[in-house]
Length: 493
Image (cartoon, rainbow, N blue to C red; front, side):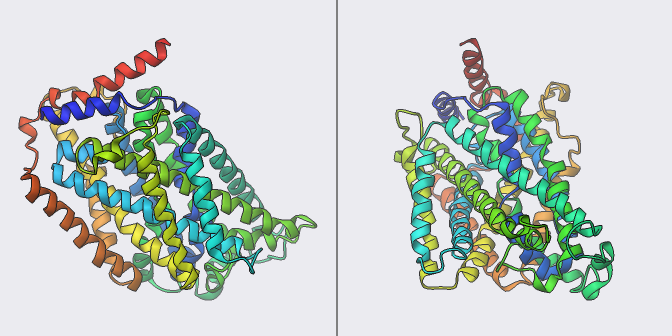
């Protein structure tokens, strides 16, 4: 345990704590709003119908709430940049932390590629004669430059990216409601269109809802960024709970409200990846002048959202590599920092995976985008499983040692139901995904890969599962007291 302790202390003293409350709030909101809402939502509606999409997003929204409260409790008690990879190592098994860390990094590396392919799909509408690979390379360069700034630069970028997303969604929901009630546009059926047209809300049956749960999980990838950024926030005990508490209601408003508007205005057969449902609604509003420029405006917003998700992907992925390097779970060179205290090599390695999107030069962009989304989904679910299991074990240890629950700065209200429900839901989603060809391929590849990583580390280092009865507060004090010392020093300055 002492070796881990020293590593944790080294980690916590290496990063600048310069992320503020407004940064973390927008990181939380921005993580819940991305390509999944603006672009992939059309695919979800097409595959399950409008009612099926609402149920899928609603169920996932509840699980996400449980997930975020679990992460919030651990992140405020132990705010480190390794986040749940570190928690999994300390409370479950170091081999599990190794497997989860690498799979989560893979999640963001592939997510970066998927986002860049989505960006290329959108911008190709305006510049069809320009080869797609040029845009992908350009975006990779811009994102790399953004991530070699100090962490406050990342926070500021995400703040404004998220602000643009929120503005666009509020505008969409407002205009959508006006179209539903017939105040603008040509729609005269309103809610009845959602209920009765094209087979009703569930034209493809209940099994379709189960099948899209897996692809829908990709839409929420990024909400756990708050935990990953906890090692670089000024006052984690105050800032993190406030940021996390914003996520659930945003999901209800933006996702459920968005699916309702789409279901009332667009036949599910017409929803897909060719054009964003958001763009379709704006273009069909028939408001003079606005309807002509609304499509272009929304495409710009979507492009901004994609760059935001990609920016977060490089940040989170590089921090995961960096934290694992400090714990000897990744090459030591990835643990080195630049003069600005940025893990430069980890940023370079993560950014380089965005070039996987160059496959669009040889294969259809739509097919690659959906496939990459499916591949990302399983990595994300594995990470969420790690959060739930780690939290269950953390709280069990906390109570075993006789510590007071009242002393927790951010307490998950639904323990143990929350983490247990999350674990069951993740297993259910994985099983349900086997009914979808692309998602099944992701599971067939992702699960064995996770097991292989786990077995490799366990065999090589002969690790054992953590015995909670033998785990003392001193074994994790590097995850707590050094962090508080850093915060105190910054506030005194």
